Image (cartoon, rainbow, N blue to C red; front, side, top):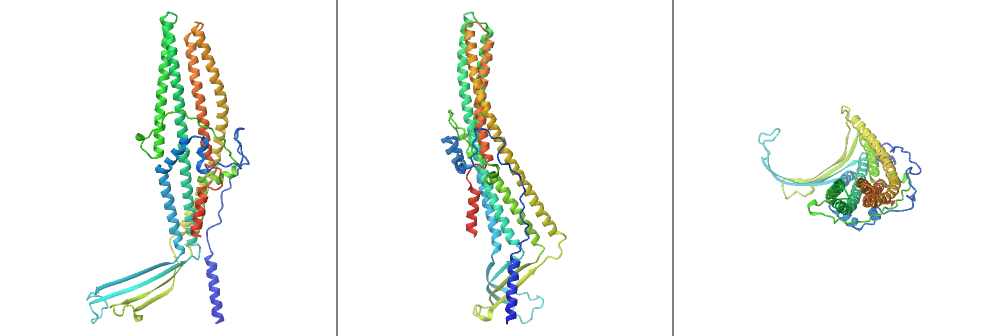
Length: 486
């Protein structure tokens, strides 16, 4: 008896040991050196890692109430975001399917039939009835022992893929909101351009009247009138082109919101959009912020688990099964003890020869991991580049904007001087035309530099992952998933 118990406990210990096996290799994340600080940081950008920018409302830093409404409409109606949400639900369902393999499968069956045997059936006894009833009810249970970690690795891969899909959803949300903010900034920049051009057209009309009056008085030649008219027509043409660009930008915003461009409009107005001060932190925290980096890392984890799944196929699968019930040819003794049947026992299966199939599957799994690791490294390197690019643009655009605003003041003084000299007859109208052109160009370029700074700030926020909070959507989704599945 003691020997039987010893064998029992030894077998139990062996099963537990085998159940702890996993052929997934240790995860090796590509080593990507990160600097202690970003290189392209201007003095106007405070690098304070303690600062926080809420991930769900970073666009409010631009101090534009209209963006809040547009953002809500985007979340509710954007088709790309809806597709990403459906993809996440699909990945979550696939993860749940893989997790179902950790539990036994239980099934029940019942049948009440009237049968007729063939008279010419092989091995049929002459005295056997041709017609008979067959009644059965029973159930079965089966459970595959996860001796080699195949099911656990499938579950791990499913969870990692679901987490990657959640990160994809967050990345799609971040990209779409950033695109909305970018388009809105461009739209309002075109409104400012239109206002400058309308003002310029009004100024050119007055200049044309002055030139026409001087020509009528015999003071100015017809060439001056022609030059003034050319300036006016060119400014009107530029104003019309700006309106065309604004219409396209308005249509683009409508598409982002998932509404028809024919039913959507944004009233033209001058909106002061504030350039936010962005705390960038340090490069190493970038890996925790960006959802696309999180997605690439989760897919690398899933690919690593799939190696374990492929390697486990070299070993036998063991399934414990049991079935039982009642069967009879009549209702009177159907559910009685003599009609009972049962069967119980393990079932082992091992593929002896497969023509190299399992070896190829392991090689495929390893190649998929190498691909996901390389993709992870590429995304991280690209993320550092995007941050440095945006910081460089913000820094240099800021300096350029300061100089351009000084150029606008100088161009305005030059035009005032040239007009005064022209009225006195001390210079020709070509000098006035040149001054007018220079002023308009510097005004538009100054506005453009302001817009470029705002766009670069949006790109920087997108490159940083959309926020400065340590707890993002992806981590929250993982916590909920862990709580649900223990």
